[in-house]
Image (tube, rainbow, N blue to C red; front, side, top):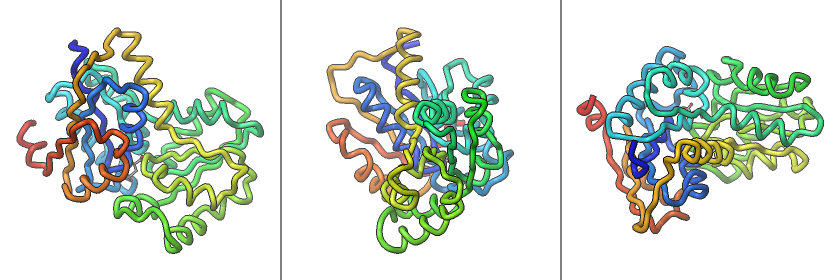
Length: 275
Ligand code: DGL
């Protein structure tokens, strides 16, 4: 395994850029190959079988291009596909659920934890299981927020219209008296300040991006696979949908890494051709 190989990161859309950005902050010498399946986003309203099929197709593509590890930067895909993906590849495959659960368990004082995510993630119960395995006495309240992902994919992350949608959707959590809320979808950190206003300052928001990046670092260090680099990275971003939209998302969310070159590849053609 060459240490210089990129880390493969995939999401149903642009939400996983929160994880890619955290990885670059934690591991500035690493190179990223990212796939955002924006043409088939959201995964949250697909069947688990479809999510598994799409996830496998994309991870096969990334592994064939050559990556030293895979990060499933999508809670929905982690919820239904992670064990299958971990068995399928010779490289380590990390998801975002356990790192998020661990951070929430560390943060909570009252053991009353909220989780928001897509319908598939919430229905899978994956966060409840992960939290309870770490803190059996925790009370976990989960809520699906199907309106949030389309907002983020359209680049709408602030303004009155967004505040109203977020506030209305999160109302049921008000009665639960939680002190910690897991943003159980990689798109939601893009709405962080709106969500914080809706639930109140006393609630600690947990994004799994940072915890996942720390886990990536731990795995690479354990295996002695960390990259050395004197030149800026050339990160590759694939989208199955609109390249302009991906470019806008990169400019907005990855600006901190502007010294590194971004190459954007558009279209499922490049995905299907390589299979
Ligand atoms: N990125 C996905 C997740 O973290 C949400 C978007 C979708 O529904 O595809 O669950």
